[in-house]
Image (cartoon, rainbow, N blue to C red; front, side):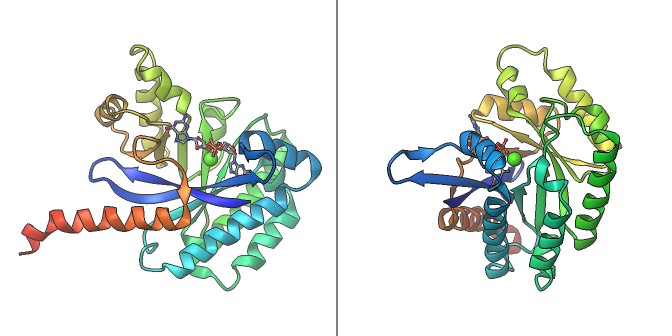
Length: 252
Ligand code: C2E
Ligand code: CA
C-alpha cells in the first residue's frame, strides 16, 4: 500500500492550501484496487486501524520533513466512523503526536456521518473530537450533503471545515437548481465560521460558477488527481514559484 496526495487549491491565486491523503493498493496480481472497495473490507476484517496509522505516519513524516512548506498548509487524513469512536485509536493518535507538536497543528481529520450517531455515540464522538482539537488537529466533515451528514450534524459540533461532496458539482452543469442550495450552504458556513472545500471540480465552467458563489477552496481533477508524495511536493513548490514570479514586479 502507498499514499497519494491530492492538492487543495485556492482558486483565486492557485496556491495550494493543503492536500488530502488517499491510500492506494497496488496488488501484484489484481493490479490497482480502489479504496472505495478495500476500505469497507478493511473495516470488516479489522485492518482499518493499521491502514489509518500508515496514512497518518506518512502525513506526519511529510509535514516534519518539510516544515517551511507546511508552516501554513495542512494535510488531511480520512478517519472512518468506526475508528473515531474508539478510545484506543485516540490514545494511539495522542502518543504518535507526542513529539510532533508542529505536525498536529498541520493535520486535519476528515470524518463522515454515514449513519446517524445515536446519543451515546455522539457523546463519545464529541469527547474524542475535543481531545483531538486539544492536540491542534482540525476536523472536517467529509462528503457533506450525502448520506446523513446534513445540516443537523454540522450544527452540533464546531467543525473547522466542510467538504462539499462532488455530487453537487456534477449537478452544477445540469442546470442551476443546485445553486440556491450551495448559496445556503455558503451562508451557513459563514455563520458557523467553518471554511469550505468543494470536491470533484473537473472543468473551468464549474470553477467559474463556484467562484461567483464565493467558493474558493477547490479539490478536483481540474487542478490535479491524487499523486505520489514527490509529485505532490513538486506541485506545491511550483505553485509557490509562480506566486513569487507574480509578486516580483511588486517587490522590485
Ligand atoms: P473521499 O474521502 O470522498 O475522497 C475523495 C475521492 O474523490 C478520491 O477517490 C479522489 O480521487 C476522488 N476525486 C477527487 N477529485 C475528483 C474529481 O474531480 N473527479 C472525480 N471523479 N473524482 C475525484 P479515491 O482515492 O478513489 O478514494 C475513494 C474513497 O476511499 C475516499 O473518498 C475515502 O472515503 C476512501 N479512502 C481513501 N483513502 C482512505 C484512507 O486512508 N482511510 C479511509 N478511512 N478511507 C479512505
Ligand atoms: Ca475524504
